[in-house]
Length: 300
Image 1 (tube, helix red, strand yellow):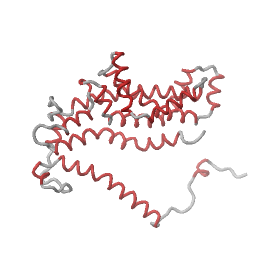
Image 2 (spheres, rainbow, N blue to C red; image 1 turned 90 degrees about the vertical axis):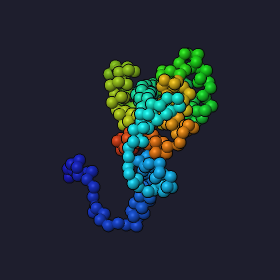
Image 3 (tube, rainbow, N blue to C red; image 1 turned 120 degrees about the vertical axis):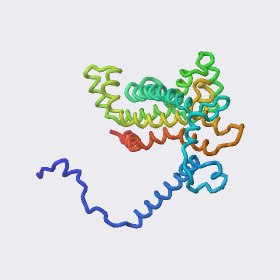
Image 4 (tube, rainbow, N blue to C red; image 1 turned 45 degrees about the vertical axis):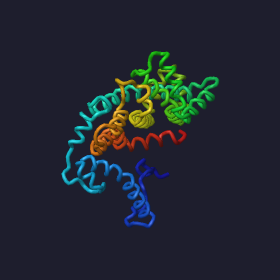
């Protein structure tokens, strides 16, 4: 029998395509057109944020700024009025960071434990519980606003940082638990049984085996939660309280102000600044998102 090395078994075979086929050309054309379609609004916002009001009133939104300036970016960050206060987006940015940094690990840890329990430590009624939990992902948030207000008020958490963290944790559980349950369900059951034979319990298996193996799906969960919590408006407006208003609420207050002249340059700069964090997170970790989704898609 001929001995084959690992490299021999996985080495791609056949000639590399050197010419453009009609199919490849069509795919590239579609991707380029799609990219342009989605990048046009961002380009318009960036150009408008660097134009003076005189240029904007000219009416050509696609024209490059004749005298680019970042003064409106500075104003949007530090001195634009968000209602009665004129401190710009800076307070909202730090509030959003505070909410996100606390909510993301808490919600992911709770969902990871739930998915782990529902995969390897099933109990009577666990499937019913999981079905109800997933069903919660399809309930409109607006329907639950008043009951949550009532509950948080009774607990003394309404309008506080722990209150908004609790809300994001609860509403992140359905989709995150589904992700982790599917991922853990794709792992070999023999791995769990071997750990049990060696005397490992619930927490030892979770910390020593499951957590290290769940890095790909955890990255997916982090991306989903960071973008979801950072872009949230309604929960931040209702539950965060005045001292913890996130960046999206501050942006709304800047754009919808009814006093003085509407400064489109400042509004566009504020919009780009608010959306910068989710964009950076996605571009930096986009490939990990795809790998993490694929990691739980095949039964091990």
